[in-house]
Amino acid sequence: MYAPERQQEILRLARDSGRVDVISLAETFQVTAETIRRDLKALDRAGLVRRVHGGAIPSGRLDLEPDLAERETTAADEKDRIARAALAELPADGTVIVDAGSTSARLAGSLPVDAALTVVTHSLPIAARLADHPGIQLHLVGGRVRHRTRAAVDAWALRAYGEIRADVLFVAANGFSTQYGLTTPDLAEAAVKRAAVAAARRVVLLADSSKHGQEHFARFGDLGDVDLLITDTGLSPQDAADIERGGTEVVRA
Image (tube, rainbow, N blue to C red; front, side):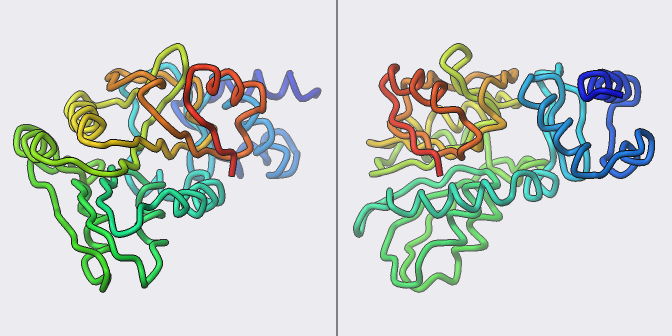
């Protein structure tokens, strides 16, 4: 079986069952797990499936939202590189907002011990990572906590971001593109992200390349609202150039 034929069959299985896993597919098609991972990567880049830990799920649901544990293990190496590159964007003795998200959490975990910053976040996991940091003055934004993302949303969170100004926002998105802008599955989280964007002088988007071209239910801004996109080398130079023509600087870590 040629690769395109195998990928078409993988897509059919994903749509029929709602999910496929690498090990089972390797056994079914009598190929290596690495071959299946390449197939899933090709299907993901085509927007036909979304890769998750150990396998993939079919694309097509705009409200599809993986849980926090699943996102922590997806594109882990890419997210680590993005987080390291984001350290260069930290202001000296300034104020930053750190949005909820698995890549943002990696940034929080990477802050050097001698960092002296005021950090505002509405993410419980990020606040927990920073609570004992000796140089961080931490402000935890409150509100209703969404179980899936452990992020505070709704009126309290919106009010808090309406009362502050920050030097830099490190924002996350489930999807980004020049066509669709910045999107996420949940309306309440989109509203908080929009408020955080309005509260910051500089906006840095942390998003791995698998999110490029993805479209989700709730839109919270244009890509032009972002000053800097930090992503990985999976984003092609041509796509990076297209984004930069819109006024957003791109770093491929």
